[in-house]
Amino acid sequence: MSKSMSRSKPTQRGGRRKPFSFPRIVVPQHRPRRFYGHGIPGVDPQKLRGKLIVVEGCDGSGRSTQIQMLMEWLESSGHATTQTGLKRSTLVSEELNMAQNGNILSHTTMSLFYATDFADQLENVIFPGLRAGRMVLADRYIYTLIARDLARGSDLEWLQNLYGIALVPDAVFYLDVSPEERLQRNFAKDYALDYWESGMDLGLSREMFDSFLKYQAMVERQFQKLHKTYGFNIVDGNRSPEEVCKELQRRTAAVLAGE
Ligand SMILES: Nc1ncnc2c1ncn2[C@@H]1O[C@H](COP(=O)(O)OP(=O)(O)OP(=O)(O)O)[C@@H](O)[C@H]1O
Ligand SMILES: [Mg+2]
Image (cartoon, rainbow, N blue to C red; front, side, top):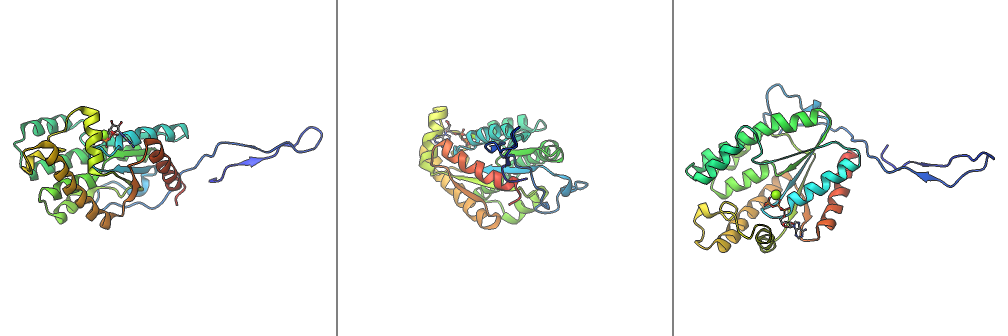
């Protein structure tokens, strides 16, 4: 039932009234699922019947804004929706914050810490949501984790093996916004730049604005490489939130229809 339904009702005299139409409801179509690698033992991907939609993009690209708008649209269209994102697991998110503040862990230990957070949310948020047939909207996924680690010198094969537990999403929308525009947005939002989002741990520059632009360009280059492997849906995020959201709605409706 992917087309809008419209029909005419006969009048009492046997003539036909003007056609009336129902709102267009898209019934999610099931498609075969798989993990990127070894997956998680005991989890049958075919039983994860909901849809996993990922919104990716560099810091300040407008992901949270779009996820919120997309969630409201999905719920108002009759699709129960769950949100997830990085550093949100009840298991380690607090400890991750402490580790960032302390800044004493090596890149590899930090990377494994983030992977733990991801695995916890996969098992306790993403899989249960999908099993229940919900839409799961992810504010970032393994691609951000891999891109950031690659920018810090990690090995791609090692990272891909680590994230072999991840489920292949139904769609990955990458919000493409220039670093200069993101710097403006970040600054307008928080009146400051974040230490980690500016890559200050890498010693690229003592000046934070300069470091932000250099580090963000490094991460963006890694995203471009990952796009060749994973094939993101690139969305021009330099437009107004409403215009971006319209495109995301159109593309999400296509995913629901199994296109
Ligand atoms: N399309 C847009 N045009 C202009 N400003 C925007 C747009 N989308 C979001 N913003 C603004 O830019 C700032 C960053 O947006 P948002 O928090 O959604 O981005 P984010 O990618 O989630 O950022 P973060 O990396 O900090 O989580 C916010 O103040 C938001 O209101
Ligand atoms: Mg955000």
